[in-house]
Length: 505
Image 1 (cartoon, helix red, strand yellow):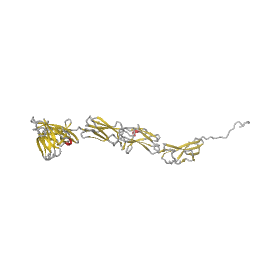
Image 2 (cartoon, rainbow, N blue to C red):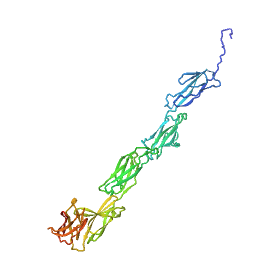
Image 3 (cartoon, rainbow, N blue to C red):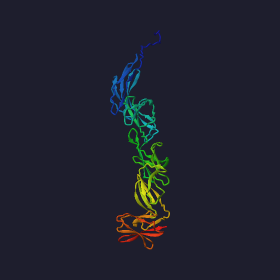
Image 4 (cartoon, rainbow, N blue to C red):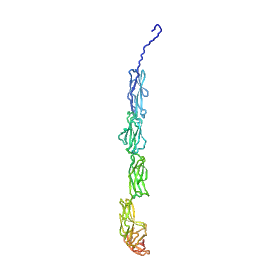
């Protein structure tokens, strides 16, 4: 409109502005378990998200995890196989990127490829407190699981298994995220096992076993004792200890032991640092206390303080004693009987079967002469008699004096002094003292063509008795000798010697 003057209004051409909405996108991803070889990856599919008034897409570009351009256009891309750089990590992520260009600019979406390591540890188990090298029988402990690659979020299952294998026993009360487990009292060894999967099932489940070794119960194989036959010199004690094992596994546990020894409830000694199969031994002697009584041992484990076992007792009774039972005297050389009796002090019957030997004893020469054996000995002469008992090797003695008496009080005793002693002794004389007769006994063969003479101190012969050939004994009558000193002489074909001196009161 000019209106006859300068232009006042100018109208342009029409510009049309079209308003559009930006595009977006999404890419699918994958989770794989890496086991040491490159993992083929499935196709990555681009999903374009366009609203109703979306701007037209003018470009699609694909990039690998290193930022390298790998594809222009297209809605699908298959990556090359992928390998982990460090398979001790729980996982590694690899991101592929797509850039979509429209009127509103560049829009990015990413695809995550996650490789979970099948080589990585799911975790470790420790015993708290640590009790090397094993747990004592009926002991308990707490196990702590420290997760490493046990899922995201971590979770696991607890199991228990016998030491020698067998099926896994689930422990549902332990939970799936509880890192501690109290074993309770264990009477044998068990594996406690944690099972988990890296990647929540992407990788196969792995197990971490932990052996809780339990020592076998304290035990012994045999307890024995021996002594001298009379239980008066020594008592030897022996304990055969059962070597400990890891119970349920059968492997040795190498424990040492201490043994305390007791008699009648009183401590008598200790044997320390015993390692089976070496036997624990102890030799007990005493000069002030009797050795008979009850013996036992208390076995203690050096590996598990407070663990003890007491053995059964072994009893040694007191040795039986021999007693000679007989009359107080023998009159007029009548035959009397001496009897052997065994008693268990003080006066209990002896349960042993014993062998008896009898001896006569000459107190002047202090010599013994064997008489015979058996529980009874008959004698017609007095004197000292010795009874020797042998009860399973325990040899004991008793001495008995049988006093001679006579119905004729005028008889006087004749004492005998033998003039040969020791190895030079040729004969012996008994009884001593004598009254009416003396028995002469040769200790070897009697001389041939010999006679025995009784003389006074001046050498006058008072009586003569011929010695029969091959005779071992001879009787001399002395009841008619007057008081005084006399000599017994032996005369043979080639010599004469004085054998004894007689003294009559």
